[in-house]
Image 1 (cartoon, rainbow, N blue to C red):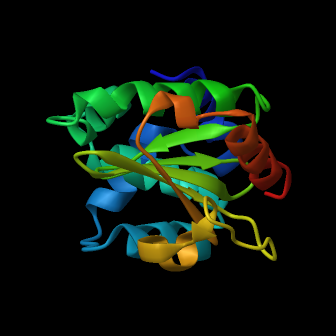
Image 2: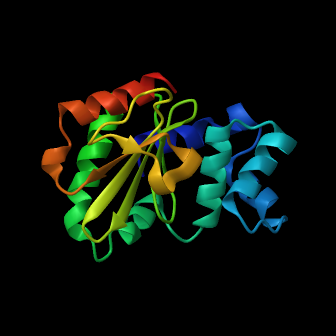
Length: 179
C-alpha cells in the first residue's frame, strides 16, 4: 500500500472520529449508487474533509481490491502505458509528504487539500493527465480539460515516458502548489 495512503488510514480515527473499518460499516448501511453521493454524504452529514471522504468511499467500494489491484486493473491490456503512470506518480510524490494517492476503478487522483492531478489510461495508446490550473492559458500541449469536465481545468495527453519532462512536471507542481 502506498505510504501516503497508509498514513491517511492511520490518521483517520483522530481526524474523522472513526477508523476506516468503522466508516465502511456506516457506508454499508446506505445504498449509494454513485461515488460522489457517498462522498457528499460523509462531508455534509459527518463533517469529513473531501480527501478523507473520497478515500473512505474508494476503499469501501474496493473491499476485495487493494489500491494496487485497482491500478493494475486500469492497465490490463495497456501494460506498455504503466511506466508512464509510474514516472508521473514518482515525480508527483517528490513535491511533498502531504499528497494522498487515491486509486479508483478508472483513474488515480492525487490530492493535497483537494485534487490537483488525475491520471487515467484513456485509450490503449494514451494516458490523460488532468490538472487543476485555474486561469492558466492552454497551448498545443496543455489543452483544455476535455472529457474531465470540471474535475480538471487542463489535460495533457501522454503516449510515452519521454513526455514526462521538466515542462510537464512544472505544470504538475504548479497544480500541487495551488491546491
